[in-house]
Image (cartoon, rainbow, N blue to C red; front, side, top):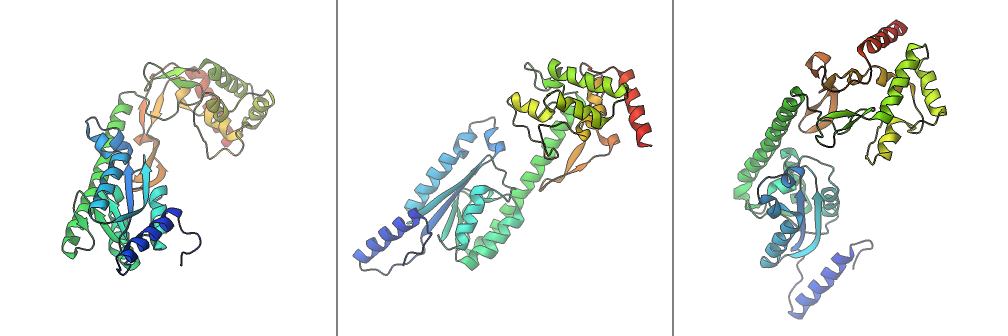
Length: 336
């Protein structure tokens, strides 16, 4: 009996399969339902050679369908993740496939290579060598000849998984080195320029003054020098209907999101204080303020100021140094 909630493709597949086998008088064996999984990452898309075409989702699926047909597998469903790292454990297509695997919707997982499935050795061991056998699922990666039904190549699968993780670690370190070199050359490597600036259209690694926002920054410094506090300045800007940095970026077509801002329509004390303490406004570029704990962990930690990359007189200043340092003294005196 077909259970409620099962996929339509699964129902059609089962009916056709049972009909075909009953016509031949054979016993129906449900061990050839295959799930195809394909993945494409940012690194694949940015390759400078012609390999990226062969790595595309479409080509992976085409190759795996051909393999399934040749070896008598019926494709239950195709799962895919585009623009996703192999270290990410929260991939939408991957997680959906795992949930369906738990429910027993298919018997085989087909991938082009082990690295398409995951580059995390811990994840590979967890599913391919622990949970998949419990769920009665076979894992096959076509190009590197990995097959969990073949006990003799388990060590080869584990070595490949380790090499795939090493690749990610090396790639992470190389990217860090490249970014640091760009920072040391005075190139801006952030996703968004700070409020008051924008990326140059000629060179996205160079900051240029955004006159409209810069005018607001000047007013904030001027008001603070005159004795207005951060909370009062925030209230004044909100009452005047001046857009917050978050809203201003959105009107410029940027997909900017600040998780620390509760109401992006109102200026906050913290936003004002952050602007007043930002050295970028005197032409000083400070980068590398945060760092990831490791290549496998997205959590970021604050870096000590002495370990940041600081380039003075890097771009046009909005605030003169005398005003800026007077503001710093006032901020410090109020804290004391």
